[in-house]
Length: 221
Length: 37
Image (cartoon, rainbow over all chains, first blue to last red; front, side, top):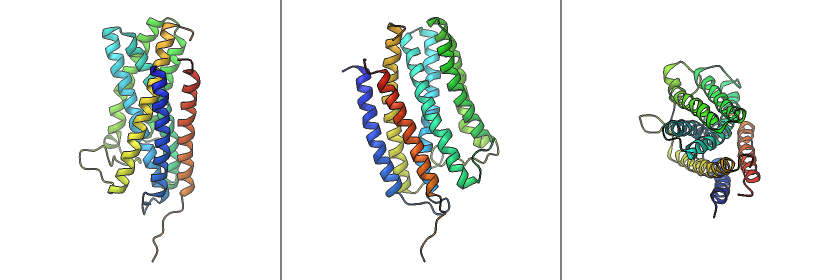
């Protein structure tokens, strides 16, 4: 079985499990008293946000190793992870404002967390545009690697921005030094959703990596 | 006395719909591009 085919099956499993996450989150997880049903957006927003940031960290790490080792497979992985990260970033930047409107009373505010996440999205778009704009494969990989490393450097700033600045965005309630502040049933739903987003990331990257490798072997594939 | 919650389920449904559309659309895009591999 080819890598692309394995990726398709992994993605299919991920999408079926995503349906199970929806059923569990919407029908079998309690409604939070102060925020109401809108709080359940958390179960898709936060896993997507974690994978948006992790995908860029992996782009940066692959880029660093690529600049030292000149292994084209690392460049292909960075390309794949960046495209998948862009899809997850789109989820973050749409579900976040949909949560913000009923809870904050506004779709958007230019606070540090939101603005830096939007900047990360633009970095993802810029990374993909750069790859499409440079014809020479060697130069394309080098330029993209530099931009990927810049994106990786931005990620810790995004995560700690809620500590560094006064922001409207809530503090982390799971990824923090102390124990998660969610009740057990809500934490289980979140954990299930995070696991499914992980499966989807892996399935997507397997397919996109196979496509990038095919394009390296046949440039117009 | 029954508990009352804010009536904002429409936002929840909108967010879940948007996320599903993005994920399925991207999965279909990858399927179309990698079909021959």
